[in-house]
Image (cartoon, rainbow, N blue to C red; front, side, top):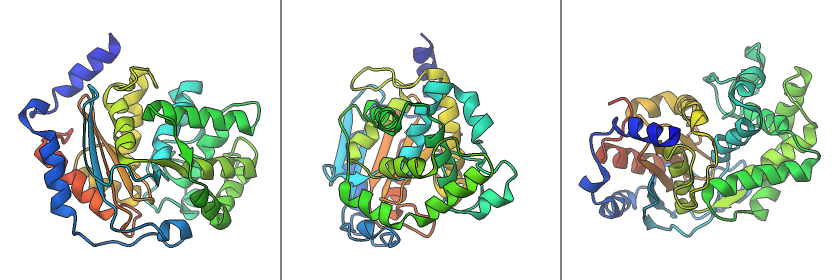
Length: 325
């Protein structure tokens, strides 16, 4: 009952119904529009990401009813990277409630880059947002389990429940990140020093790195977004992944912090809760309506895929999907 009410109320914010737009034609047209766009560069600080084909480009829309529309390299599997933060947060809320996030991590934007150590030092609460590296590592550390294997199972199962399919860690990405994650280790040690890390330092960094290395394709990512659009119920499996009461809180964090230090600009231009990852993926959510995903490896200075931003912005404008309208 509550899930249905949630969807009905939020759907009123959109003036364009799915029936008014041919969604398959829309994704085809937008894909064609930006196919030759070449701005941005693959991240180089994770060598395996630098090696990904920069010409790959895909777009998917999945509706809250489970209808799928895709174009481009939709079968290519890429690492979700920071996108996983927005869904691992749901696992913590499922286990310990929304207040645990406020009390132990925080929900305010840092206004600084996602890997900033200065943000920890400048804020008295230290970790202040679950969608930057410090807060995401703290989130992993806060999840309760008997050991690392059982904790990983919670993280993995949660991501798979959102995607509605089995997911696999990309070993080359995982190794590349593990070999170069000195900064994240430093972040975890600093958090521990301030009492804002809640489990073993090395274990927490490793599990966080593994989560970022999970492989996903664009259509699976859109299903994850559609699960949030559908008030926490996966539209393909019909399984409740997170309670409807938690979804507005999760989307609020995505809206304020989902695109790193360009989150305000994104919300100003597009008006949708979203989450990006330096692997080239972006997921956006139109509550009650759609999950929109796009993938293209070259990113801008903030770490957000250039083509994926342009594609989702164009789709959102066509669908009149800005939640503030």
